[in-house]
Length: 589
Image (cartoon, helix red, strand yellow):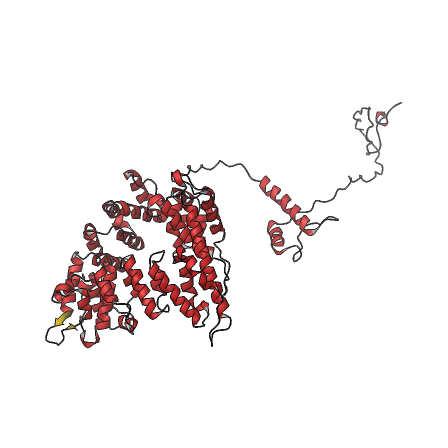
């Protein structure tokens, strides 16, 4: 039996598929052939045409808006939901896009994180830090907070307490700790101290944490600050934030070395950079900095000149301070013919080039007279010790008590107040503050039109004296003008100050007002009262009868506020106990 492929020349162009087990031989091409009608070629079997992939942005848009609002641009099979089809298409598109990538050389591995030899947190304190960082977003606004302590406001105190024990932050919590410090600048010093050198290491890998490169001392100081060659390279090649951190760290440890480093590149720095570097000299400022600061008085930048003059005026023995003292003495003197003796003032009639070079700004702000503006700047920069001789040996309190002719008293006392803050002179600050218990004290110390800042004056006094002054002020004048003063008192508040604040809050409750008017002071009390006072305050948590004319429901609101205060104080006591190392040097479980 022969196969059809064994026949002679075929007159048809169609071919037959061979059967299994047979062979085919090529048919000889005929020299001549009579064309015959041929059948059209049979088309191959058709397969479904593949659907073009949906553009990636369209898939993303459908995913963001939801398949209920936007139908994804993909084919949906029978029995398949739109969301499932969208996910399938996204998976296919991802594979397709990645398949086109070519392998690239691996990047350079980062250097290992530096070691931190400090002891780890006790387990209970570690769990507490995790809770505080997780809750740092707060519970939201609203006038009624309930009785739950605000953990967000306890984080700064926890960080400060942990720093006092010398612990290091857990490695797993470092990102959350740096995120919290990025969001709140008030947390940064304590957070960076707890994070240690690894905060700087992480900051080099994440631009959002660059602020950590400006850590100024302790574990957060830039590595390599002890190597002269490394210091030189960092100063010449580092980022601006790294250079500021390096200069500040050097000034903290060796002020002369920091100044010498700054001098090497001072003439080539930008004006805004010179200003920041100059401000770093406040750390460890001494007479050794005077020659450099005197040269900076001729700087081409007005802001640099003004900062240099301010720093020099903070050095009572500087040549600039002596020049300002001579100018101020020509304007202010003692009229011995008056009965009683009085201070007479003759303000400058011009602001010459020498005054401007020494930092006197010639143009006053709106609403100020030129001559009074110039006088205030001269007195502010003059050494306060020089007035002892000028006023016949009187001490600061006696000088402040002298009458001032021609209504210059407010201007003169305001300038002396700024000088006391700049020169950190406690005797003058004490004299200008006076006795807080006088009924008319507030109006006397800060009369209308005065620019005096009592809070800044208080910062010059020792901690204990400052707390006692504010406590007496609150006992006489109440809380309305004391909020900023409370903010500069040492924490925890001394017992007399804490008692004065609580008594004033209790008086406000008895008056029938809402506690929201005192929410700022109540918040400070939660953070600053000694936790040992919690048991004594328990009696304030009860709901009291509302006095006649009281705001509706004020008694219940005050009860909630005091419950929250007591609960917060007890939580603070627990947090401190969790940080306390166990006997024998081991961390507590």
